[in-house]
Image 1 (cartoon, rainbow, N blue to C red):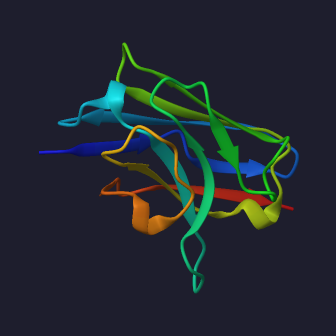
Image 2: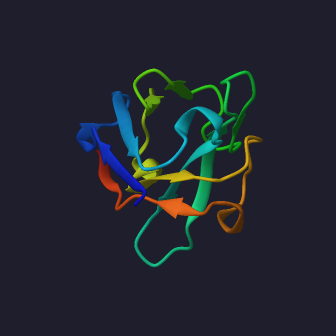
Amino acid sequence: QVQLVESGGGLVQAGGSLRLSCAASGVTFSSSAMGWFRQAPGKEREFVASISWSGSSTYYADSVKGRFTISRDNAKNTLYMQMNSLKPEDTAIYLCAARTGSVAATTVRNYNYWGQGTQVTVSS
């Protein structure tokens, strides 16, 4: 049974930083591409960042490029995302996702497994 458990969310002021983590189990983490998505109230789930199985390829949404950094530790079966210079518009539930392929993807339909999410709230 695949489990993805996110942590690290919280309330932060604009300009602040947070580091999200996603602990994976039941999936061959080291051969799975991973991604972060977010969903704000009343909005569609949107792509934030993704990373290939080895970590050699990463992709970012234009809205977070230069501020967020995705990374992974295959020895710990854990995915990370460092979020700096946070803005109120970054407020959302952030979800970790895994896909059975090793190549990173940027769309919701390409991911097979999802976590429950962690809330990030950025105050102005």
